[in-house]
Length: 192
Image 1 (cartoon, rainbow, N blue to C red):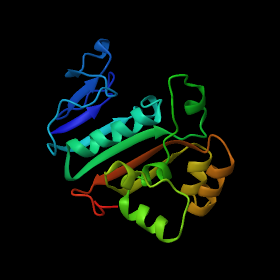
Image 2 (cartoon, rainbow, N blue to C red; image 1 turned 90 degrees about the horizontal axis):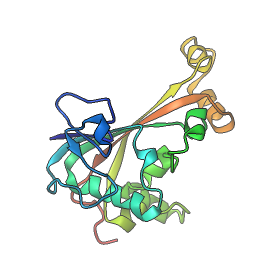
Image 3 (cartoon, one colour; image 1 turned 180 degrees about the vertical axis):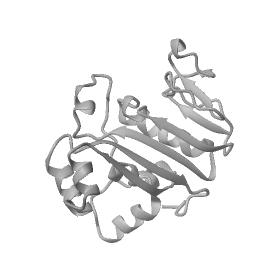
Image 4 (cartoon, rainbow, N blue to C red; image 1 turned 180 degrees about the horizontal axis):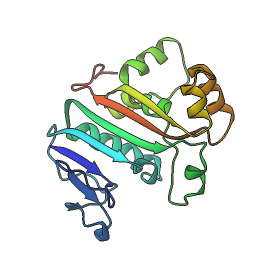
């Protein structure tokens, strides 16, 4: 089974389209902050959240409960595709319904292998995977750049390192980020 969570008016064929707004006419009307979700453990292969996650989990407790539910319902190797506005783009800043920035590093904190390495080097990252008892591997990150940056990168005028530096120092370089993670079940470090 595949889920399109927070689908709004963008339905995906072959997915169960879920939203809390009845006007969108989802397949299932559900508030994703209400847990537990109505799916059994390990029954989902694929979850898509397109411009959804940044609207959810205003409190840390609610946000972490959403990640725990994703991990619970996913099968081993099941994937979550997250697309969110870049936190330094005006689309993120201006929308009053955005409650949190979603970043690759923040998502990576649910990776128990990363948590263990961070412990080994006495790092300061929060070990969310270990603390929550869930484990996601970061599989892929894609940055959708704005022009003129996209054109300059395609023309070879800017390197990937140049783009990363620009994104760290300027607004409106990147419009959105797509992050894919895979569930590791059971957790790789269940007793830590």
